[in-house]
Every structure is written in C-alpha cells, then in structure tokens.
Amino acid sequence: MKWVITCSAVLFAVSSFAMPKVGDRVVYVTSTSTGGSPAVTTRVTQELISFDAAANEFTVRQTIAFPTGTPQVTTTVIASDAIPSTDVINQILSSCAMMGGVTERVAVGRTNVDTCKMVGVDTVGGEQGTIWIGMVPFGTVKSESVTTAGPSVRTSMALESFVLGR
Image 1: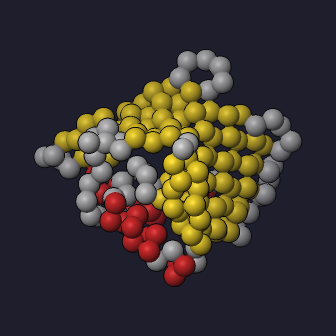
Image 2: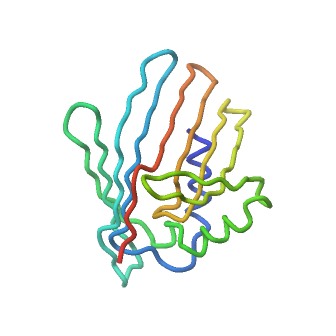
C-alpha cells in the first residue's frame, strides 16, 4: 500500500497545468485482506464539490461506505495543483514506456480507459504494488499492492464509475 500511496503522491505532486473541475467524481471499490482473513470491501466516492479561486483550492468530499454501518463522510481542502490535470495525465500516458510502464486498456463500466500500468517494489518495506493511471478524475484507474513484511496485507482499488465535472 505504501508503494501505491507513493506513486499516487508523485502523480499528484507533478500536476501544475490545467485545473480539474467542480463536479469531478469517482467511485472506487476497494478490498483489503490481512493474512488468511476474508477481505473487507468498501466503496469509496470522491468528488470535487467547490473551488476557491482566491486560494486556488478545491474542497473534496470523500465518502467511505463499509459493508455494515453508517458511511463515513469527510471534506478536505486541497491545493488545485495537488490533483492531476489533463496535461499531467497526458504526459504520463505519452511517456509511459520511458517511465518503465506499459500501456493497458482497462474497462470501467461501459467505458474502456487507456492507462499506464506501472509496477514498483519496496524491498525495505516488503511491498509490491501496481498502479494504472488514466484520463479520469484524480488520475487513478486501479491499484493493487501486497505487503509481505509481517502479516501479508493485500489491497486493491478499482474504479467503478466516474463523472467529469462541467
């Protein structure tokens, strides 16, 4: 998971071009299992709900729905350049092979999304992760990671649907 988070942080950190739009929305299905225990599945929704032009910041609402219980809803204010732009994602897709990735088409609902699939290994932390970056809000289409240091932890996240803001 740390490797996938690091890749996501790099993706977010390099964005400095066109801004995303209010109304951008993604829904991910996530799964986490530790050792031999059954996987816990959640549905995570992220949406850009407002933009403060003076501060150049978006408000992001995140809803995590667990199999049981009340969904957890949080809002966070983040700098607009912390969200990958169309230009940054295009740059990643066009230089995918140069960055050690491979291009792959991933189905998201009825849409096929062209992605750059990148694999990384953290030999110190005992983690291997894969991330698929594509032209969707927030940039991440899919991710998987396995941690082998200590109890084995498997995590996955797959984009179920997305809406582009207006």
